[in-house]
Image 1 (tube, rainbow, N blue to C red):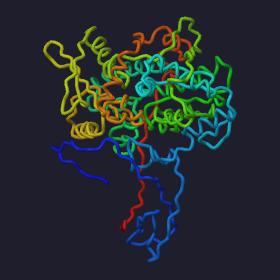
Image 2 (cartoon, rainbow, N blue to C red; image 1 turned 135 degrees about the horizontal axis):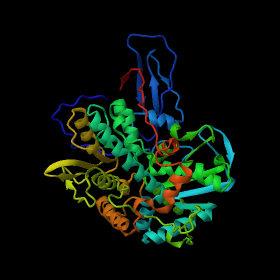
Image 3 (cartoon, rainbow, N blue to C red; image 1 turned 180 degrees about the vertical axis):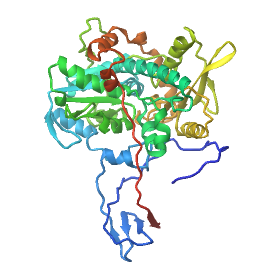
Image 4 (tube, rainbow, N blue to C red; image 1 turned 90 degrees about the vertical axis):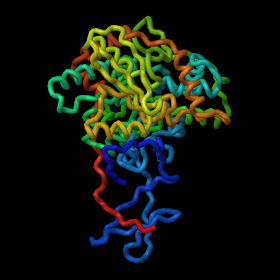
Length: 482
């Protein structure tokens, strides 16, 4: 439903998760003579009915695809009720059993290598669920996936490092471009690592908001490029024969992995073939009658040629969503204003999920960053942009309240435990993780030099950046009869 907001309106009472109905239904087009009144549709208990002719004609219920889901305006951040045939635990177990998979193009391929990439947030979610330390939970997950048949279990620190470095550089370019042309949509630069936010922006605000969004890929998709386009060569495996699974805190990561932008026609495969979430892995354990604490431990793999590698789930300074605002702020303060130790002191605004940090130079405010989590804050941010009232240079935007540690597919709180208490616990666990090396370390430098042909190369742009697309809504108008 479209609506117009007054300039003074502030949205303060929105649900952050809008869930589709129990059965997601895509109506089927029926050829009819054009009438001035249009088609009349009745919604019944067991489906939709066309009553234009005076008689009820039930519309066919069809299975929807991930592409359909991206074009739907009915849900924003929750994909729980959407039938995702290629992104399920059942499909993953089938691949382990048969060593074959069917891609989104309907092509069945043999699997030579199964690679699992672990992100920190769902790992911590299961650590809390099974009362394990982050290190033990990581080793138990590696052992569990290998017991199912995984060949390699990797951490995603290198992909997170690359994402942060690219975002830092992209911000500097946008800042300088803004100085030359303040009327263009260079700033504020908005984070792009949350697919729920990106999907909402594409469907709801289209070409107005998309130029502001960072072109840097999320860590999941950078990891996909690393596995399919780099690791495949060192392992001498056809990229389409690698089945790459990521372990993520969010159902929307399934939609992100299935985007056409992340499908290579040359390699005939997606960068990420399947996304499994914390909730789904808990269900897999429950279905097999196991507890993660009972699983045999195994070390993470280190398939890169660096001899001094120490694989581990690591954290970055800043929020549990990856620390984008902190890293970009510190980098910009040093590169633009010579402040090598700029203080990072956030100030809460209307709620703890909307906070800002500023840098002053000679009594003048020169940088203003924000973190906006949850759709209540996202809506207000977008309305400020539309009124030309946004004061920020950069905003870390996440669809979920409290960010990725509170992702929609994280394990739910135990009985008697509030969501806020669980998030606080996860934030504590995140702070216990070893800190990633500043600047990414030797592996990242070597990847830029040997794989990407330098930081500013066309190859680096292709592998580490992406594009967004405004989603056109249907022109068909329906008269709904209740």
